[in-house]
Each structure stands twice: as C-alpha cells, then as structure tokens.
Amino acid sequence: MSEGLSYANQLAISRTLTRIENDRSVAREIIGSLEERDYHVVGITGSPGAGKSTLTDRLALLSSKEKRTAIIAIDPSSPFTGGAFLGDRIRMKRSTKSEEIFVRSMASRGKVGGLSPSIYDAVEFLGRSGFDRIFVETVGAGQSETDIENLADVVLLVLAPGMGDDVQTMKAGIMEIGDIFAVNKMDLPGASQLAAKTEAILEMSGRKLPIVLTNSINGQGVEELHSLIEKALEELDSSGAIEEKRRRRTLYNNLNSVYQIIMEDFSENAKLEELMNYLLENRRLSDES
Amino acid sequence: MMRRLKVLVAKPGLDGHDRGAKVVAMALRDAGMEVIYTGLRQSADEVVKAALQEDVDVIGLSILSGAHMRICEKVLNLMKEKGIDEKPVFVGGIIPAEDALELKKMGIFEVFGPGTPLKAIVDSIKGAIDK
Image (cartoon, rainbow over all chains, first blue to last red; front, side):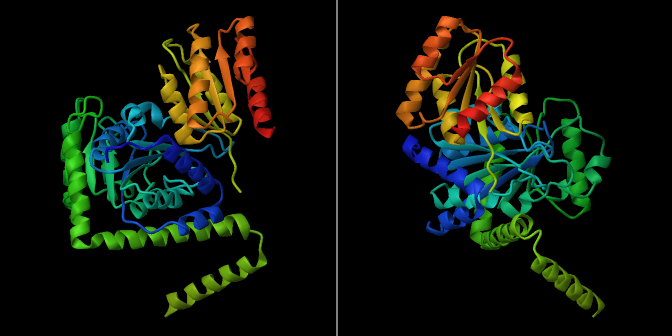
C-alpha cells in the first residue's frame, strides 16, 4: 500500500474498535455488516522482556511495504483493580510513526491465556476493514499462554538468553507452540547455546522448525525472520492449509463468545446449571462407553 | 457491558524527566483505568496520533521543559484538525499560575502542579468523563 491510512479512516476504525471491545453483541453486528475478506494473522509471543514489541515493530514495518498492516499489542489487566499499564507503543517507534501502520493497545481484561476477550472480534474487524496483515502481540507469556495458537496463522515464539537453564525449554506449554522461533538478544552470552538447545529439544519431539538469531535493537536477523514468516504464510495459502487455520479461528472465536455469554449473562441462571449437569452427565456416559 | 476509562499519558517535548508521568500512570492504573504510556520525547503529532489510534477517553500531558504554552497549543490544534477535540486534555508539570490560567482558556481541562495529591488527579479525570 502506498497512499497511507487517512486520519478519517483511522479515526473510524479506532472508534469502532472501542465499541467492539466494550460490547460483544455490537461487535457481532458490526462484523456481520462487513464483507468477508482474506487476511493473515501473525502471532508474536514469548516471555516478558524477551523483545516481542521491538521485534513486532520492525517486522510490521517490513510487512507494511507490501501489505496493509495493523498491530494489536496486548498487555495484562490487574486482576485486582482491572487497571492496566499498556506500554507496548514505547517500543514501537517505527510503526507508530509510520503513516501506513495502525497500532492499537489492548488490555487482557481478565482473560487468561495471553489474549484479550475481544481479540478475535477485533482481528476479524480489522481484516474485513481492509488490513492484509495483522500482528498480534500477546501479553508476556509465562508457560501456559498458548491461546495465540488458535488465533494466528503463523506464531513466532521469541526467546532470549539468560532466563533459566535447559530444563525450562523442556517444560510443556509455551515451547510446544510456535511455527518459527526467534532467539533475540543474540549479542548476549548464551544466545547461540539457547538456539542449539532449542533445536535439540524440538528435534526430540520430532519438530523441525526454523530458528533465527535476532537483535531487535539493531535489526540484525530481522529481514531473515520477515522472509520466513512470509514464506510460511505463502505455504499455508498454496497448500490450502490456511482454510483449516481460518476454520479454527472461527471456532475459537465462537467458543470464546459462548464462554463470555455464560460468565457475564448466565452465571446465575438456573438453566445454565441444567445445561452443565446435562453436559457432565453425557460426558460420563461417553466415558463409560 | 465492560467500560473502562482509557487514558493516554504522554510526555511531549524534550525534557527527560518521566518519573512524574510514571507515578501518575501507576496511580491511574491502580484506580482501575487502562493507561497507555508512550514514553519520552514525543512530538505533538505523535501524541495526537496515539490518542486517535487508541481512542482514549482522556489525554494527560506531562511537561517540565517550560515549553507548555507552545506544546499545548499545538496538541489542541492537531486534535481539532483530526476530529478528536472532544477528549479532555490534562497537563501536569512545572506550570506558573498565570500560564495555567492561559492554558485553561486555551481549552486545557485542568492543570496539576507539583504536590498535587494523586487522588485529586484520579478524581478530576473521573469527573471530566462523568460530565
């Protein structure tokens, strides 16, 4: 894209995103009124401080040379006050300056798993509004924030040296997701060892995935990472596997909505108890058979 | 449904003292608001663009450089130009009393000087939105 995003357009998108974030049924209506459209979602996850935001910033800038690009960056809400400190824009100097990129911060609002309750709707809305490439940066992931796998077409896992020994790479959860691995902060001691260990661990579980050493501060390795992401998306398109990803995204969007409807609207409803008992009873039946 | 106050805390201009902005940002967070903090040395353009893309309810500017008159004028003008001048703007920093009056005439919602209790800032922001 070349003409840049007009401010009027950005303002409309921005205000609509707020409505989507604040009201699920409004979100459904808005999305339903827009034509379906093909777009790609790139998920970026990894532990806090690994360099996700800075890498996302650089990757989005490269992507924006060819595609209409948006970023949604999620940071955690306090489980106690509901407040949040959203600091991802600080690391996204290039993307926030660019006239081509739309950047939005989102608070996780009580959702565990690394995403935010309205993320599926927000992404679908941006896709239908004309964005081709949507980067979603998760909250700093601990060991079980794996929901991004259901949302994104390609997941980039960002690792950095100095965060524990190789026992950490053997644990279940976060290391099991990711289609591409970036070992960031490659200038720090232990980076190449971490890359080697990661490769070994992946190999043991029969996965052969690209691992790139990067330095998000000076940009080293980022072009290679960008072309690996592009290649992965092209392969999904050409093999038709992208359809399965989209089906999965819709499924999880619906599951997510159902869960929220239950939590917000039906948690005190007697019918819900009936339904739960029915489900539990039937699961028992199927377990026995 | 879920309605959370979203606040942009920005530091336009060239002074490098962000302790105050960070303290305020944390206080707003602890008051249950979603605070977007954009870091040091932002241009007026960047501040307004962030407010627009994030669709915040309130903008807070921290200015200790002495350039508050010029910066606020620029921010308010850009907000008008981009169609987001309905959002209340708060200023915190070292602002002489006569300048504070001028700023409020210009359209700044409230000005907070050194020693303002954090609760006063939280209450003032909530009050601006309830109106």
